[in-house]
Image (cartoon, rainbow, N blue to C red):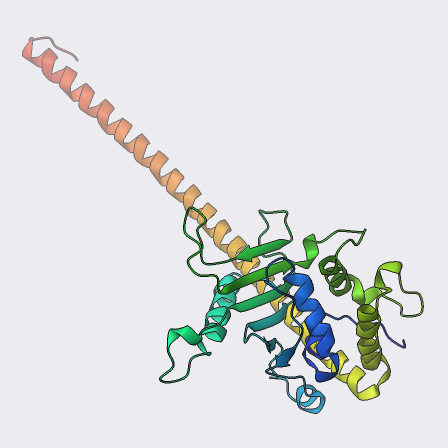
Length: 291
Protein backbone atom coordinates (compact mmCIF):
# COMPACT_ATOMS: atom_id res chain seq x y z
CA UNK A 1 0.00 0.00 0.00
CA UNK A 2 1.14 3.55 -0.66
CA UNK A 3 -0.16 4.72 2.71
CA UNK A 4 -1.22 2.92 5.86
CA UNK A 5 -4.91 3.34 6.60
CA UNK A 6 -6.59 3.35 10.00
CA UNK A 7 -9.83 1.29 9.86
CA UNK A 8 -11.26 3.36 12.73
CA UNK A 9 -11.60 6.49 10.54
CA UNK A 10 -15.31 6.83 9.84
CA UNK A 11 -15.27 6.64 6.04
CA UNK A 12 -13.08 3.52 6.13
CA UNK A 13 -15.15 1.93 8.89
CA UNK A 14 -18.37 2.49 6.95
CA UNK A 15 -16.83 1.05 3.78
CA UNK A 16 -15.60 -2.02 5.69
CA UNK A 17 -18.88 -2.98 7.33
CA UNK A 18 -21.54 -0.94 5.54
CA UNK A 19 -20.93 -1.52 1.84
CA UNK A 20 -22.81 -4.06 -0.24
CA UNK A 21 -19.56 -5.55 -1.55
CA UNK A 22 -18.47 -6.25 2.04
CA UNK A 23 -21.81 -7.60 3.24
CA UNK A 24 -20.12 -10.90 4.14
CA UNK A 25 -17.68 -8.97 6.39
CA UNK A 26 -20.59 -7.45 8.28
CA UNK A 27 -22.13 -10.91 8.78
CA UNK A 28 -18.79 -12.30 9.96
CA UNK A 29 -18.24 -9.33 12.30
CA UNK A 30 -21.72 -9.59 13.85
CA UNK A 31 -21.39 -13.34 14.41
CA UNK A 32 -17.96 -12.78 15.98
CA UNK A 33 -19.05 -10.03 18.37
CA UNK A 34 -22.37 -11.67 19.29
CA UNK A 35 -21.02 -15.21 19.54
CA UNK A 36 -23.02 -17.13 22.15
CA UNK A 37 -25.77 -14.50 22.20
CA UNK A 38 -27.80 -15.49 19.15
CA UNK A 39 -29.78 -18.71 18.98
CA UNK A 40 -28.38 -19.33 15.49
CA UNK A 41 -25.65 -17.66 13.44
CA UNK A 42 -26.55 -14.82 11.09
CA UNK A 43 -26.50 -15.98 7.48
CA UNK A 44 -27.98 -13.01 5.61
CA UNK A 45 -28.36 -9.30 6.32
CA UNK A 46 -29.96 -6.35 4.62
CA UNK A 47 -27.90 -3.19 5.11
CA UNK A 48 -30.44 -0.47 5.90
CA UNK A 49 -28.10 2.49 5.33
CA UNK A 50 -25.51 1.20 2.84
CA UNK A 51 -22.24 3.00 2.21
CA UNK A 52 -22.41 5.10 -0.93
CA UNK A 53 -18.89 6.15 -1.88
CA UNK A 54 -19.78 9.30 -3.79
CA UNK A 55 -22.41 10.54 -1.34
CA UNK A 56 -20.30 9.69 1.70
CA UNK A 57 -17.05 11.26 0.53
CA UNK A 58 -18.77 14.45 -0.66
CA UNK A 59 -20.93 14.97 2.46
CA UNK A 60 -19.30 15.85 5.78
CA UNK A 61 -22.60 15.10 7.55
CA UNK A 62 -22.88 11.51 6.30
CA UNK A 63 -24.28 8.98 8.74
CA UNK A 64 -21.31 6.87 9.82
CA UNK A 65 -22.97 4.05 11.73
CA UNK A 66 -24.07 0.80 10.11
CA UNK A 67 -27.64 -0.43 10.45
CA UNK A 68 -28.72 -3.85 9.23
CA UNK A 69 -31.52 -6.42 9.54
CA UNK A 70 -31.07 -10.19 9.39
CA UNK A 71 -33.35 -12.93 8.09
CA UNK A 72 -35.23 -13.00 11.42
CA UNK A 73 -35.80 -9.22 11.28
CA UNK A 74 -33.41 -8.65 14.18
CA UNK A 75 -31.86 -5.17 14.01
CA UNK A 76 -28.16 -4.37 14.32
CA UNK A 77 -26.45 -1.03 14.75
CA UNK A 78 -22.64 -0.80 14.62
CA UNK A 79 -20.79 2.43 15.36
CA UNK A 80 -17.22 3.61 15.86
CA UNK A 81 -16.54 6.35 18.44
CA UNK A 82 -12.98 7.66 18.67
CA UNK A 83 -13.35 10.12 21.55
CA UNK A 84 -15.07 9.66 24.90
CA UNK A 85 -17.00 12.37 26.72
CA UNK A 86 -19.31 12.75 29.68
CA UNK A 87 -22.66 12.36 27.91
CA UNK A 88 -21.61 9.51 25.60
CA UNK A 89 -23.48 6.83 27.65
CA UNK A 90 -26.71 8.83 27.28
CA UNK A 91 -26.13 9.09 23.53
CA UNK A 92 -25.47 5.33 23.27
CA UNK A 93 -28.67 4.48 25.16
CA UNK A 94 -30.73 7.02 23.22
CA UNK A 95 -29.51 5.67 19.88
CA UNK A 96 -30.38 2.11 20.90
CA UNK A 97 -33.86 3.20 22.03
CA UNK A 98 -34.34 5.22 18.83
CA UNK A 99 -33.41 2.30 16.57
CA UNK A 100 -35.59 -0.08 18.63
CA UNK A 101 -38.64 2.21 18.55
CA UNK A 102 -38.39 2.95 14.83
CA UNK A 103 -39.55 -0.59 14.10
CA UNK A 104 -43.17 0.36 14.80
CA UNK A 105 -45.18 2.43 12.37
CA UNK A 106 -48.54 4.00 13.09
CA UNK A 107 -51.06 1.30 13.98
CA UNK A 108 -48.47 -1.43 14.62
CA UNK A 109 -48.64 -3.36 17.87
CA UNK A 110 -45.82 -4.40 20.16
CA UNK A 111 -45.74 -8.00 18.90
CA UNK A 112 -43.83 -6.74 15.87
CA UNK A 113 -40.86 -5.53 17.90
CA UNK A 114 -37.69 -7.53 17.30
CA UNK A 115 -34.41 -7.65 19.25
CA UNK A 116 -32.06 -4.75 18.60
CA UNK A 117 -28.31 -5.09 19.07
CA UNK A 118 -26.11 -2.00 19.31
CA UNK A 119 -22.35 -2.55 19.01
CA UNK A 120 -20.00 0.35 19.81
CA UNK A 121 -16.28 0.23 19.13
CA UNK A 122 -14.67 2.84 21.38
CA UNK A 123 -11.31 4.38 20.61
CA UNK A 124 -10.98 5.80 24.13
CA UNK A 125 -11.89 4.17 27.41
CA UNK A 126 -15.36 5.00 28.67
CA UNK A 127 -15.21 2.99 31.91
CA UNK A 128 -11.78 3.66 33.48
CA UNK A 129 -12.67 1.90 36.74
CA UNK A 130 -12.99 -1.51 35.04
CA UNK A 131 -10.14 -3.33 33.27
CA UNK A 132 -12.51 -5.42 31.10
CA UNK A 133 -12.66 -4.30 27.47
CA UNK A 134 -16.08 -5.85 26.78
CA UNK A 135 -19.30 -4.68 28.45
CA UNK A 136 -22.80 -5.96 27.68
CA UNK A 137 -25.90 -4.10 28.88
CA UNK A 138 -29.42 -5.50 28.87
CA UNK A 139 -32.77 -4.80 30.54
CA UNK A 140 -32.45 -6.62 33.86
CA UNK A 141 -33.71 -6.19 37.41
CA UNK A 142 -31.50 -5.89 40.49
CA UNK A 143 -31.31 -9.68 40.83
CA UNK A 144 -30.23 -10.15 37.20
CA UNK A 145 -33.60 -11.28 35.88
CA UNK A 146 -34.19 -10.28 32.25
CA UNK A 147 -37.29 -8.17 31.61
CA UNK A 148 -37.32 -9.00 27.89
CA UNK A 149 -34.72 -10.67 25.71
CA UNK A 150 -34.65 -8.01 23.02
CA UNK A 151 -30.96 -7.44 22.43
CA UNK A 152 -28.87 -4.88 24.24
CA UNK A 153 -25.76 -2.73 23.99
CA UNK A 154 -22.22 -4.06 23.46
CA UNK A 155 -19.36 -1.70 24.31
CA UNK A 156 -15.87 -2.70 23.18
CA UNK A 157 -13.04 -0.49 24.49
CA UNK A 158 -10.15 -0.93 22.07
CA UNK A 159 -7.55 0.72 24.33
CA UNK A 160 -8.05 -2.05 26.90
CA UNK A 161 -7.84 -4.89 24.38
CA UNK A 162 -4.35 -6.37 24.66
CA UNK A 163 -4.59 -10.01 23.53
CA UNK A 164 -1.54 -10.92 21.45
CA UNK A 165 -2.51 -14.55 20.86
CA UNK A 166 -5.69 -14.48 18.78
CA UNK A 167 -8.02 -17.32 19.78
CA UNK A 168 -11.45 -16.15 18.57
CA UNK A 169 -12.87 -14.26 15.62
CA UNK A 170 -14.02 -11.53 18.02
CA UNK A 171 -10.43 -11.01 19.13
CA UNK A 172 -9.32 -10.98 15.50
CA UNK A 173 -11.70 -8.15 14.62
CA UNK A 174 -10.79 -6.13 17.70
CA UNK A 175 -7.08 -6.52 16.99
CA UNK A 176 -7.71 -5.45 13.40
CA UNK A 177 -9.53 -2.29 14.42
CA UNK A 178 -6.98 -1.48 17.10
CA UNK A 179 -3.80 -2.16 15.09
CA UNK A 180 -4.97 -2.05 11.49
CA UNK A 181 -3.54 1.41 10.94
CA UNK A 182 -0.03 0.03 11.48
CA UNK A 183 -0.34 -3.01 9.20
CA UNK A 184 1.65 -3.42 6.01
CA UNK A 185 -0.23 -5.62 3.55
CA UNK A 186 3.05 -6.89 2.13
CA UNK A 187 4.04 -8.33 5.53
CA UNK A 188 0.82 -9.26 7.29
CA UNK A 189 1.09 -11.09 10.63
CA UNK A 190 -0.21 -14.66 10.91
CA UNK A 191 -3.38 -13.61 12.74
CA UNK A 192 -4.44 -11.65 9.63
CA UNK A 193 -4.17 -14.72 7.39
CA UNK A 194 -7.91 -15.40 6.96
CA UNK A 195 -10.19 -14.69 3.99
CA UNK A 196 -12.11 -12.04 5.94
CA UNK A 197 -9.02 -10.17 7.09
CA UNK A 198 -7.50 -10.24 3.61
CA UNK A 199 -10.76 -8.83 2.24
CA UNK A 200 -10.73 -6.14 4.94
CA UNK A 201 -7.16 -5.24 3.97
CA UNK A 202 -8.22 -4.91 0.33
CA UNK A 203 -10.70 -2.23 1.43
CA UNK A 204 -7.90 -0.41 3.25
CA UNK A 205 -5.75 -0.74 0.13
CA UNK A 206 -8.47 0.95 -1.91
CA UNK A 207 -8.34 4.00 0.36
CA UNK A 208 -4.57 3.95 0.17
CA UNK A 209 -4.20 3.74 -3.59
CA UNK A 210 -7.21 5.56 -5.07
CA UNK A 211 -6.40 9.27 -5.08
CA UNK A 212 -9.94 10.45 -4.44
CA UNK A 213 -10.52 8.00 -1.60
CA UNK A 214 -7.17 8.79 -0.01
CA UNK A 215 -7.82 12.52 -0.15
CA UNK A 216 -11.20 11.92 1.50
CA UNK A 217 -9.50 9.78 4.14
CA UNK A 218 -6.94 12.53 4.75
CA UNK A 219 -9.73 15.10 5.02
CA UNK A 220 -11.46 12.97 7.64
CA UNK A 221 -8.20 12.56 9.56
CA UNK A 222 -7.54 16.29 9.42
CA UNK A 223 -11.04 16.97 10.71
CA UNK A 224 -10.43 14.60 13.63
CA UNK A 225 -7.06 16.26 14.33
CA UNK A 226 -8.72 19.67 14.29
CA UNK A 227 -11.42 18.46 16.68
CA UNK A 228 -8.79 16.94 18.97
CA UNK A 229 -6.81 20.19 18.90
CA UNK A 230 -9.90 22.26 19.64
CA UNK A 231 -10.77 19.91 22.48
CA UNK A 232 -7.22 20.12 23.88
CA UNK A 233 -7.20 23.92 23.64
CA UNK A 234 -10.61 24.08 25.29
CA UNK A 235 -9.45 21.80 28.11
CA UNK A 236 -6.31 23.92 28.50
CA UNK A 237 -8.42 27.05 28.64
CA UNK A 238 -10.64 25.48 31.29
CA UNK A 239 -7.59 24.36 33.26
CA UNK A 240 -6.08 27.85 33.12
CA UNK A 241 -9.41 29.39 34.10
CA UNK A 242 -9.70 26.97 37.02
CA UNK A 243 -6.15 27.81 38.07
CA UNK A 244 -6.90 31.55 37.98
CA UNK A 245 -10.08 30.96 39.98
CA UNK A 246 -8.15 28.82 42.46
CA UNK A 247 -5.53 31.55 42.85
CA UNK A 248 -8.26 34.17 43.37
CA UNK A 249 -9.95 31.92 45.91
CA UNK A 250 -6.58 31.51 47.66
CA UNK A 251 -6.12 35.29 47.78
CA UNK A 252 -9.64 35.72 49.12
CA UNK A 253 -9.08 32.98 51.69
CA UNK A 254 -5.82 34.62 52.84
CA UNK A 255 -7.53 38.01 53.00
CA UNK A 256 -10.43 36.55 54.98
CA UNK A 257 -7.95 34.83 57.30
CA UNK A 258 -6.11 38.14 57.85
CA UNK A 259 -9.41 39.92 58.50
CA UNK A 260 -10.45 37.20 60.91
CA UNK A 261 -7.11 37.50 62.73
CA UNK A 262 -7.50 41.26 63.02
CA UNK A 263 -11.05 40.76 64.25
CA UNK A 264 -9.80 38.30 66.90
CA UNK A 265 -7.18 40.84 67.98
CA UNK A 266 -9.81 43.58 68.17
CA UNK A 267 -12.14 41.38 70.20
CA UNK A 268 -9.21 40.43 72.45
CA UNK A 269 -8.38 44.10 73.07
CA UNK A 270 -12.01 44.90 73.84
CA UNK A 271 -12.17 41.97 76.25
CA UNK A 272 -8.99 43.19 77.98
CA UNK A 273 -10.42 46.69 78.23
CA UNK A 274 -13.72 45.38 79.55
CA UNK A 275 -11.92 43.20 82.10
CA UNK A 276 -9.81 46.14 83.19
CA UNK A 277 -12.88 48.33 83.59
CA UNK A 278 -14.60 45.56 85.59
CA UNK A 279 -11.63 45.28 87.95
CA UNK A 280 -11.47 49.06 88.39
CA UNK A 281 -15.16 49.11 89.22
CA UNK A 282 -14.66 46.40 91.84
CA UNK A 283 -11.74 48.34 93.40
CA UNK A 284 -13.80 51.49 93.47
CA UNK A 285 -16.66 49.64 95.22
CA UNK A 286 -14.20 48.39 97.79
CA UNK A 287 -12.93 51.91 98.43
CA UNK A 288 -9.48 51.09 97.13
CA UNK A 289 -7.70 53.92 95.47
CA UNK A 290 -6.18 52.36 92.37
CA UNK A 291 -4.23 55.43 91.39
